Image 1 (cartoon, rainbow, N blue to C red):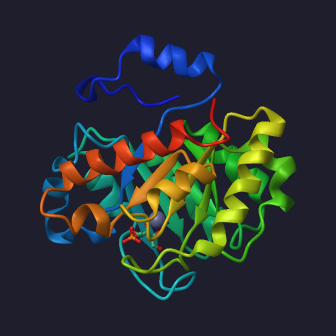
Image 2: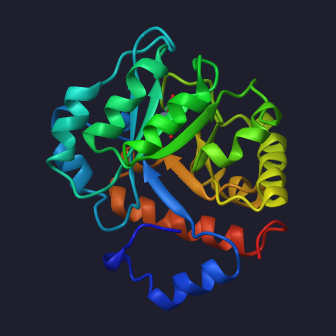
Length: 250
Ligand code: DX5
Ligand code: ZN
């Protein structure tokens, strides 16, 4: 189910209906990778009240060829925003560092399948520390090998670009995998969010929702817009409409 969002007008009755129907509401997670890193508190504030989570891309220059922010910045940001932090760890040692982000207070901690040595242990440690656990897969990584792990995580992140940089074009080739992932989740009756990350914008978000995504990360489409809050609201409306007409939903 969604985060409480008193400011966005989601009623208790509406949420109850969504839960009864066995599906979860659209979640919007703007990525601060495209924000001004010197003004992170202000950039978080710019989407407070319209976003569900703030997506934080942690990169270590090893798992991906880019270096962004780490634990000290996440800890600082937590003091300056009420938005839950959705930490996406693109790092080569998630087994070593994932727990620290959960302990720091991140609401979601997502670790990459390609980098995990002990996925079950690490996902359990993240949950035990009070965060939700996410498993991320790159475009070339299949989801089927993780079917038995479905009870161990709360969200599956399907990268729709090669990770490392914002502003890359959306990879259409991931859509069949997204449909298979939605079918897997439904077959197991699992309450696992399906998150798409990379190239999600007004041109692509509806196809993602129709294929089965219910959590949408958008970096350049939000922070590259003149009005980031309006961009989040417009993308959410598109995702909601596409979800309502999709085959998987309802
Ligand atoms: C890239 C990150 C994404 C990035 C997406 O590896 O994981 O979260 O911010 O940026 P856009 O939305 O611009 O593709
Ligand atoms: Zn990301």
